[in-house]
Length: 328
Image 1: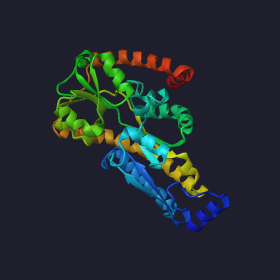
Image 2: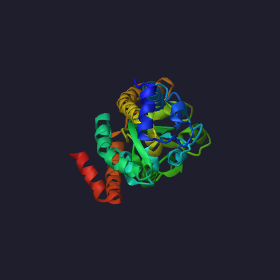
Image 3: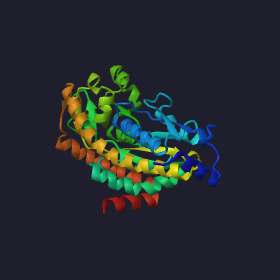
Image 4: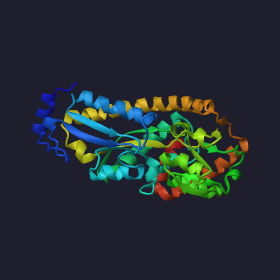
C-alpha cells in the first residue's frame, strides 16, 4: 500500500504538474472513465475491480469515476474522448477503430482465433504494434481482454454461408462490414445498445456477436436461433491518456500498471466463464442453440482465407510477419 505522504513526496521530487482537470494531487486526483458496456457485462465488472484496486493501492490519492453503458460517450467517441482529455480512461472494442489502423483488426479475421489460448497468443504478438500506434496518438495501452467466441443470431437455422445472402446484417466494425459484403448480405451499422430496436423494426435480420452481448441485449426478445461458430474473438482495450498517466507520481503510475496486469489476467478468466454462462442463459431463455453444419464451417473457412489475405495485403510486411509468427 502506498502512503499518501510518499506519493506526494515523489510528486514533489519529480516536479509533476497537476492534471488538466485542475485537481491537485495533494488534494486527490479525480479521473473519469467511459465504457460502452452495461454494468452487468463481464468487461465492466472487470473494469470496476481494476478501478477499485487502483484507488486502494493509491490510498485514495487517485479516484476514478466510471461512466458505463455509453452514458457519457458512445463507443465511436470514446477513443477521441481520451485523446482530447474529455476523459482520462476509456474502454473500446479495438476492431471498431480499424479504419484508423489495420493492426486494430487482426483479431476480427473469421476463425483466425477460435479459443482462449489462440486469443492470448495473437494478443501478445499484436501488443507491440498496438502500443506503438497508440503512443503516436498520445495514448497508452493498459490491458486487453478478448470477448468469448462469436456466434450467429438469426430467426431460423442457417445451414450454409449462402443462407446469409440478402439478409440485413448487423455490423459494428470494418471487418464485420467486409464479411457481410463478401457473403452477399446487406451490411447495416448498429451499436449494441440499439440492437433490440433494430431487430424489432426489421432494420437487421441477423448478426454475429458473442453470447455475452446476446445476454446484455436480451437477444431472446429479437432472435430465435444462436449458432456458436467460433467466428472470432475480438478484444477490448483499456486506454489511458499518456499525459494524464505521466502527471501522476511514479508510485501511482506503478499502481495503475500493476492493477492493469491483474485486470488482463482476470479478464481472460471472466471471459471464459461468460462463454459458458451466457450460452446457457440464451438456451434457458428459449433460444435454439444450433451447432454449425459442416457446410457452413467450410464456407466460413473460405471467407477466412480471403479475409486473411486481404488483411495481410493492407497491413504490409508487418502484417505478414504478424500472421506468420502467429501460425508458427
